[in-house]
Length: 378
Image (cartoon, rainbow, N blue to C red; front, side, top):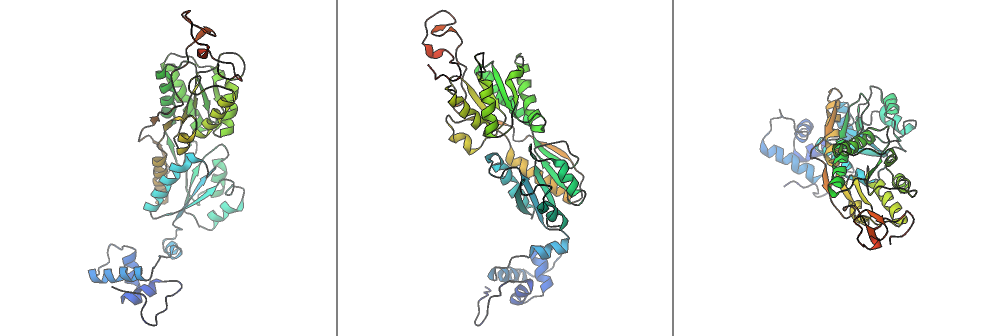
């Protein structure tokens, strides 16, 4: 067994290939080829073992800067997200991290605010060759055209969860996810169903609205324009949209599909403030599933989308671009969207002719009546 701490030996502050070669008793080139898994290197098993023993004993870490110079690449990719604190991105980032590690790439994560195209940080990363490519999680705030202008043909990038560029993209089957959420409410017996959707101009917003309408059409239901809101993906957007749906004294929906679990949290807050009960008087189901959905009251029914797989596939697309491949677009549909049923959905409340009277004329407690917005449940 080789040890780096002999008598009088001082451990260098920065271990190099020369130090490993000296301790193993072989040339620097042999060490370099062995540690880089050169397939044509011919060396005895005991020689290979001495090299790895010496590297471990010296706690040798390969120099990514030196490797980048040899390969003329940085060995790193950047991920740009609108908000690193958004729990929806947790599985996505984990999938990207696992895939970049398997590909031998380092991952740099940055918020859109810090890497805004007009700022100097992004230009420096691109201009100095410190990043080989980018994954861009598109949102309402991120205009991919600005990135295209800065990166031109210097650095390839792949857009995640959006379409509409010629640079390559990886998206989810958002229409299927929204359709599954709506079908769940239909199976429970709901017919007055609304959608709090995303930005109508975004790919995800359009696809989720499309899936919602497909489910309504298949059930023979007409769309109500006032119950189809394109709000956004923040909790503030969900809150405002739910207040709008429940405003006034007319009929309101008995169930709502929300295009994002974060927006659903805001919608849930609005419902509680209005004095309505979930799910007794209004059911809520959201797209995406995170730990946060279990921590609401009541816990939110969600549709789990393959975000982890989306991250891995996006890295694969970027790796193909880095290897000289042409841009391509993929839809990640496996595993298929899956309904996670929790306590926020239930059959609709029974319709009544007037408070205290059921539709068949029999007496029924007034609790079956739908209270007006702002009033506490009877």
